Amino acid sequence: MIEVSHISKSFRVDGMTIVQAIHDVSLTVDQGAFITLIGPSGCGKSTLLNLICGLMEPDTGTIVLEGDPSAKRLGRVGYMLQRDLLLPWRTLLGNLLLGPEVSGQPLERARAQARELLPLFGLDGFEDAYPSALSVGMRQRAALLRTVLCQQELILLDEPFGALDALTRRTMRSWLLEVWSRLNHTIIFVTHDIDEAIYLADEVHVMSPRPGTIVQTTRIELPRPRREEMVNDRLFGEYRTTLLQALGV
Ligand SMILES: Nc1ncnc2c1ncn2[C@@H]1O[C@H](COP(=O)(O)OP(=O)(O)OP(=O)(O)O)[C@@H](O)[C@H]1O
Ligand SMILES: [Mg+2]
Image 1 (cartoon, rainbow, N blue to C red):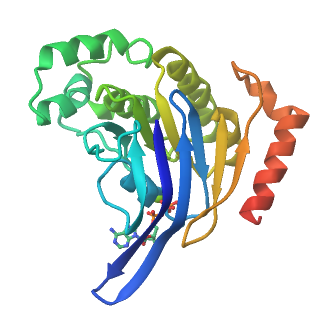
Image 2: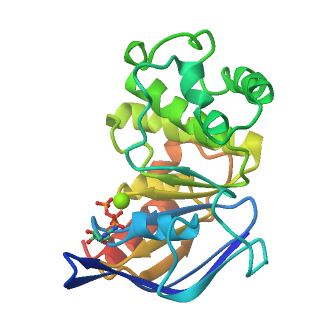
């Protein structure tokens, strides 16, 4: 689906200081896979997603989407930003249709698809509600549905559950796996939460502190569908220890 080879990226701050955000990152993601990315704050996780979706280009290295090195990535990848906000003056449906509206696509099809997916996202009956009337979890699910409606096969999620309390987070991760198994997306999911990284993934990639590079890749062999009780399994505990070691904590 996507092949990232040896990419590095630096930023110039105030025209002088150079911050090397990521260094020599390589990553291959198969079609339909669920990949999680974990690493300390500021190690370049969001930068890596910005590069993958084509918002910026790497200084060195290559990113190949669907086997075509010349292909433009921008507009072909779904992306939910770390602080993805709903517009308070628009209804839920108005927020969901933002993408197609901004890009000038016909709204009828998008509206029909949004309505069809509302139940799966636990938002049925709320299409005319304003964001202030939704719970935090519902708002996050709405932001996710908005990303899904962009109709891209590869979806990048930057800490989508970061603002949620621990209990809602647990409900949301099981729910996200359910959505993923029904819609067949390829997902790259960034998180700070070790259990979340293991629970969701086919493969966890651990990044080092800045300049971020991938220091460990662990295949997660837990069976699917995943269940909450699995966090108590011996194997789950072993993965947890491996990741903690790689993170140096
Ligand atoms: N556009 C930019 N211009 C200058 N510096 C930037 C830019 N984007 C990111 N950086 C710097 O690059 C480094 C990596 O930032 P990034 O946001 O990718 O980290 P992160 O791993 O997503 O952090 P967090 O976990 O806190 O979200 C930071 O030092 C940041 O200040
Ligand atoms: Mg970030």
